[in-house]
Image (tube, rainbow, N blue to C red; front, side):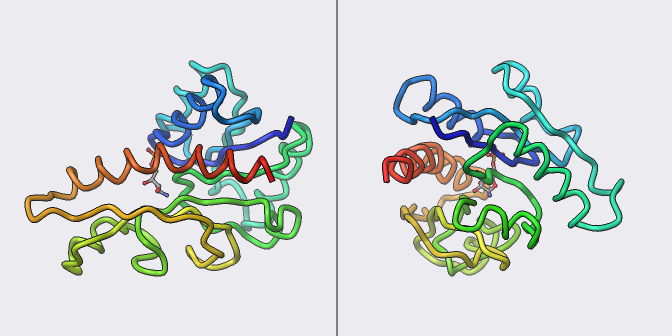
Length: 188
Ligand code: GRF
């Protein structure tokens, strides 16, 4: 079975959605490692509760991105990781990881890319006053949310929406779309 590592920096609701999809049998892969760059992230508690191994690192302890990515690569090798799945990992992937996992790094982003890349995509969409935003699952390249799109789902913006309410609906879509897209990719 293919081995997957999830990279996350925060809450980890998408991490949880993937764990749940694996448990239910709808996603056939093993989530054998969580890579996390924030020792205070709630996703760490989720991993602990699910008995999933964790590699936590502090980027400030390293001189360069390449030096911590080399360490991540070592961890990925130990766990025989085939796929890297980014789920709220708040940093750009560098050439060290990209060259080893080319075409095998996936991300989820809360907008219809190429609209609203980067931070606070939901705030950006509200600010722009568009009627529809959404969710994109895409391959990762060296850019900020610029890789080839795999799948997108629209989410309407309601006139009554606050950032909070819109985020809740977007995340509900993410939690369905991400496991479904990964299941499809793994079938290929
Ligand atoms: C998600 O909205 C995802 O699209 C973005 O970061 C957020 C992570 O949320 N890349 P969570 O940590 O999975 O709850």
